[in-house]
Length: 400
Image (cartoon, rainbow, N blue to C red; front, side):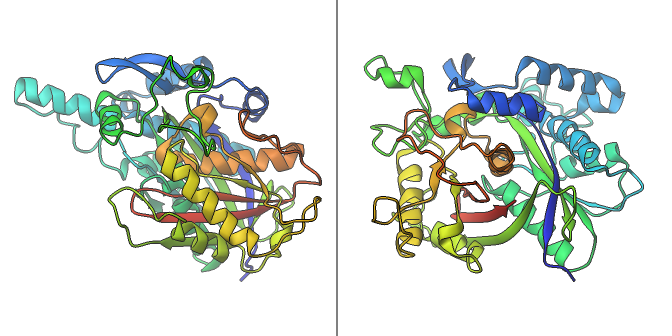
């Protein structure tokens, strides 16, 4: 059985748009996607779907009476999955697995059903079946008329990359030849925002700090004085196929995963042991000097950004990568959360999309308020990191 895994398509729906051309143009801009909305009893910055993407979801919801009752997480996943299999050339006659997960699941619909229950003492007939996590892959399978296995899971913010791990495992085991994997999240609700505020990690516009007005999520700013995480919404999925395919956008060169013993309910260790282990596993068959860039998880929190950076230093400095200045050098580092916020379970696959776009266009997309990093050579290998509550890290190495 071939060990080579091809990514033959990737599609998303997010604040950046819903087609690769628009998404790339938005990445090249230094503007962020955050707007203020009244959530959790105050004005709150979030990153919502763009107007065109919202229209796609509105039309999808009206296209079938059954879809009217589905949560946004399911609708986002359906919209992205339709485009992904179309771009890959898959049809309903193909047998392929589906693994699309979510960190929070149907939080918007659940909150509405629960509020109605508190007010009336009665639950809607469809309250339970439309708020289960398995809803996502099941409805995507229904929409695509697929006949393969369907899996939905939640492994917090690394959910999408864990879906990718599952897909790779199924493919390499010879249980199927194709797998659709990814994540979907619609967390822009009162209760979800309140939970993030309770953790004291959500960004606040502070007039005393003008840099927050321009870029309110300071992801990969290692000297920021406060936590600046902001939530976004969307879904991203990719098509995996066993073997080296001519239409491949990229290949999966390595996968790594790790979970560390936690000292606190939400934080990882000071040097992110889980990331060190997951990166080393993903890179075990690769000369570290060949890694051109890393798309970091970097959610915009003080501890999260710094610990991941320290883990990268540990892994790559120990390899003694030669630099142009004669010392040691790290790969180019970036993240997309300063622009679209943290999309929880969908974030890892949106990072995969950024990595693929940078390799396709041979252009590095940096963080505008971070140190400028210029691409000195062709971008051929990109490492993508993701981690969530519970210290469950995943690293995926992509190549052209």
